Image (cartoon, one colour):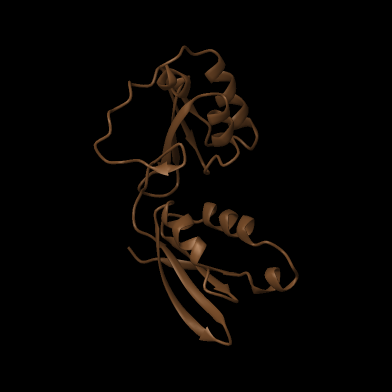
Length: 175
């Protein structure tokens, strides 16, 4: 599979005093399965290497001169996360989901609203699965705040974010 790169030059954003991280995440979230990100920055963006690495991306970088850097981020495979950290292989499996939601055709904030409403109707220890068209960055902290654990990541094609929510598992583990 050949990767096509989408260009993002954050130098003008930084020169104007702005913060490009949101634009970078937005661009990465919109990438198709065969696409990567070509980032141009006025410095070597070391913090991005781990941030995008946790989303299944590897990188190649090179100095362009005058302090500018060109970095190519490309997919190296799906990564699954559990409450924000890459999940260890061999961890105990969760029960089969009792509820399934396909939110891929919904516009924000409807997927978040539907998932949070569904969690209210479930019992501690039960699992909900959801399909989304983007990473639910605003939903995940809300799930944690409500005492739920989650696992998620993009599928192998990078088009569908698969989310599992274990109801009340954080509170259950504290007992």
